[in-house]
Length: 393
Ligand SMILES: Cc1ncc(COP(=O)(O)O)c(C=O)c1O
Image: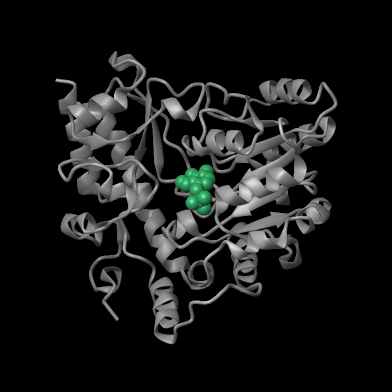
C-alpha cells in the first residue's frame, strides 16, 4: 500500500501535507481544466491526502476484488451514528433512508417525488449553480428568493415567494442549501424552524441539500440538521461524506426522509439505487465511521485559512468585501468596488493566473463576485491573493 502523507510524523494539517508537484499529478477537474501556471482555487475539491480509513477501505476492496453492486444499510448506519455524536441528532432513522448516486442526482429524485413538470422550485441565490442547471434540466422552474444583505435567508422574501408559488394551487418545493454554498452561512435552529413553519403553512415541500454539514469550520458554530427542527417532519434531506472527506469521485450519497415524508421516499424507483458505486459506499461509510480525527484536522486547517484569508484581503485587496462564513471551505468575495464589471474572475485568471469561480452562475447577487476555494495550503492561499492583487496593478 502506498504511504499516506498525512500519516507521516510532523504534519498535523492535511492541507499542508501535499507538495505542489504531487497535486499537479492529479487528473481531476480542479487540476486539469487550466494550464499548469494557473493556481486552481475554484471547483470544490480539497488539496488533501485522503483519510487513512478511506484509503484502507478502498484498498481492501481492490485487493479482494470486491467491486460488485452495493447492498445494505452500513452507510446509513454510519451517518446516523455520526449525526448523533456530531450534531446531537438521533432522529435519523435508517429505514427512512435510501442510497442515491450522488447529492445532485438525489436532489433530482427527491424533487420528482414532491413536484411535477413545470412546478416551481425555490432557491436562495446566490447559490450553488447546479441548482439552476439540474432543476431546469428536469423540467421544473427555478424561482429565486434571494438571501438578505446579511447573506442569511430572508424569511419575509421567502414567505412572499412561497405564497406566489402555490397561488395557482400547484405543487412547489424549496431547495434549501444548508450550510449555504457559496456564503458558508450556517442556518440557525430558529431560522430552520421558521422555514419549516412557512413550508407547512403554504404546503411547500422542503428538500435540504446538506452536503456541507460536516464542514463547519468556525469553532463556535454548530450545524443543525433540517429534519431535526420542529415542524420539518415532511422534509427530505440529502447527505454525503463527499465534501467533508473529499470523495466526489467516489459516487454515493444518502436521501433521508422525515417521518412525514417516509411514504414519498418509498415511492423512489428501486433502480435509482443502482447508480451509486459500491466502492463509493464503502469509502463514505469508512469516512463517517472512522474518519473523524482526520476531519477535525482538516477543519482546524480550514479555520486557520479562513482567518489567513481575512487578513490577506484586508492587507492586499482592501476593496474586496468578504464576510467570512462559518462553514464550507468556500469564500464569497464581493469585488464590485474594484470596477472589474460582472466577471472579475476573468481578470484574476487572465492577469493573475488564479482560477476562481465566477459569481454570475450563482444567480441574483452573483455578478461582480467570485468564489474562492480555501481548501489548500496557507502558502498557495497567500500566493493566490498576492497574484490577485498584482492583477489589479
Ligand atoms: C451544495 C452542493 N450540493 C451538491 C454538490 C455536489 O455533490 P455531488 O457531487 O454529490 O452531486 C456540491 C459540490 O460542491 C455542493 O456544493
